[in-house]
Length: 84
Image (tube, rainbow, N blue to C red; front, top):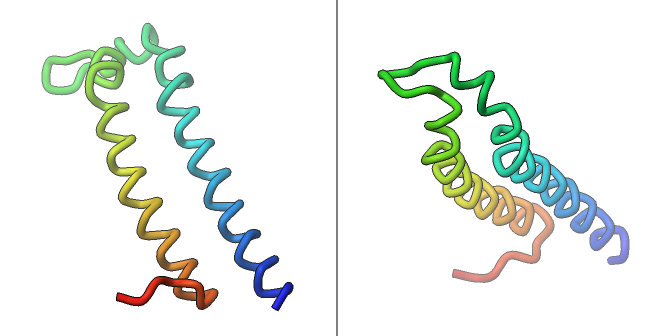
């Protein structure tokens, strides 16, 4: 049983670190490079402006759905999922 908990927490911790890395990237890294990104124009909008205004928010919502699905998959694999 402790081996199962170790495996569960290892997978959950890995997922958490990936999500933190993505969160940091879309929260800070993208915004640190707004000026160079503004040289790229997509549909008439500079990419840096778009990422600051909407792109990061869209990324956060997508990350939420991806995290929930990945955590649910881990729960099912490790046998700790809630019954539906």
